[in-house]
Length: 486
Image (cartoon, rainbow, N blue to C red; front, side, top):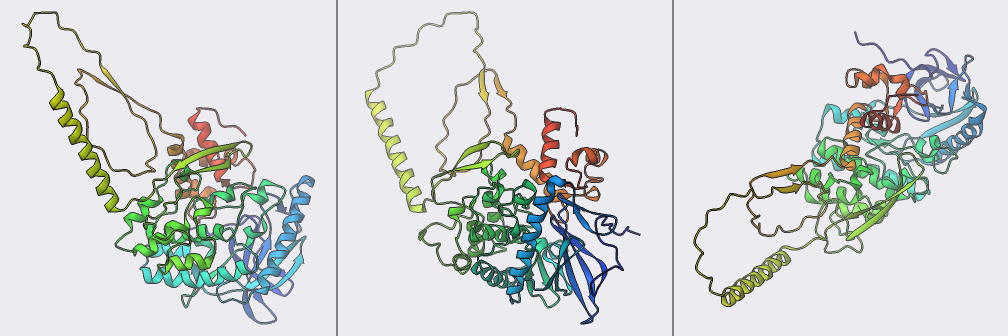
């Protein structure tokens, strides 16, 4: 029999919160715990969300929530104020596709939201059970979510953590957007409050506290959800895409099963450069319906391509201390007629050069008698293999024969940092089965025996979870052959 999940920081089932009887834990996240409870007054089930940020607070013996230290008191209170703001904002919405908050109260030194509870499953669970849904089903889920997200943006509010685990599908098939917890984490004093993101679904601007976020940021995340639906894989991390962007190839492979219009809209929504994405839900909806992007009429439907010839992106490094500037070059689209014209010009020039050489060449003198001489070995030709990201697709020039050589030496080159970063991100996403952006012991056991054995050392902040940054630091230490230490 499989063991039931134990939530050590959660309130015990059977306890009460005012008139609500706690039944079980529905789930946990970076900022709190959600319970299934029974409303004794209305006699119906409800969902109650408790503010308990694992990095800042813990459960005391009397059931109250307290900051982990006096140094964290101000950050904890700031987050609690944002939690109250989130509850009040959501309570203003009466939209069928946004989670409804019916009540808010404070108790145990923290805050609680009371929400409607409905039967169903998360999109994350649905895609595991039934991957690669038909396009009609994809659009049937997406369009109601766009209506809800548009209402959120109209209230000058952003979600900032859209992912399959935060999209709930009711029993009748209607979707609802859950967990606006990350929306309050914009401008806090600590990294624990500002760096709320899920690798693969978070846009590049969300990695930096100074990144300008807006509706285009939520569009990136929702486009990532669509990418997951049509490819059966999580989207690659935004930072890794600066070195090697695999999104266009993955969307190209989905052609045939899904329409070019849908795949083009996903690619536009997942543009790394925020300025290349649709800037509003209405603009993105137009792309999904086949309308050209404003200011980009006539652009070829190349999923994930950006109209700029080059873009320079400044982002914080993984340590958060220094800024790294990377330049990514994208080839502009060429129509078939231009390709043909370019090739025609190439062959015309080649023919003129060949004729000119033939006419002007001098008669060759008769060959000199062969003179025996000691054979001299020709120096080997050294070929250096250099890895470069395949970002621009250009017509291949005719092959030119290389001089013959006795030996060809191939110089191996270490894998690029971008390739390593992508592999680390893929390892993390593959182990993160619930898609919450953290690894718990059950997720690393069997898959990463060394991590399971040294879990406490890898878990540097002691929250019993391994974040992506902690996982990446472990891989960096292993790559540099340094001993693991706290």
